Length: 105
Length: 120
Image 1 (cartoon, chains in turn yellow, purple):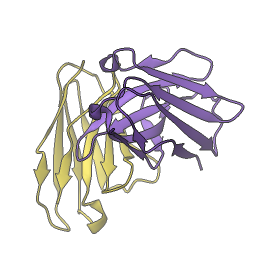
Image 2 (tube, each protein chain N blue to C red; image 1 turned 180 degrees about the vertical axis):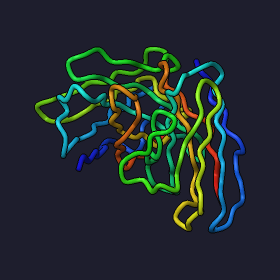
Image 3 (spheres, rainbow over the protein chains, first blue to last red; image 1 turned 180 degrees about the horizontal axis):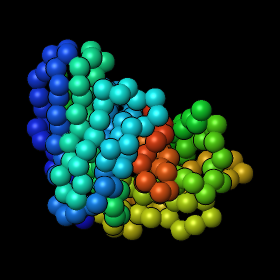
């Protein structure tokens, strides 16, 4: 299985901050990397797919980059509604696997 | 707008089989652009992909479930099913019904999730 490692596991930020979350794959996954946001008691919601493509309806302050094994999710000008947990997911090979999550608080 | 709604028992006894149904509205379950499947999340933990199926095709399962899982599609009822046998406490989790784009394999639609507890 492809292991996905996210760091940090949590971070403290303030409204207006720029936040960067990193996801590392245990082997090259090209650009088959997706990012999700999850709020307490809610299902995850896709933000970014194929490493850098913004899902329709997602604010442009969210962006993704990277390829092969190293990827980042960046949130510029953090908003109150962005305090949540973020997960990466590789879609290169089954079994599809997720990172452990990063809580932004 | 596509909607996915899970239904099933919230409590299952050890060794029993969990049966969940996901009713899909707002989208055709016969679409060749999507997979339909399940993801679970243990309380306070990460996400685990269980498997998915392409309408008219063969299912893909996570090998970690060691053959305990079966996923099916009923196009006439617009439903996706999950059956997980030999349940143990380790299977207690929130189970999400999901839709995935077949090209990017990104989960673009999720049900609200249903909590399943395994206990005698």
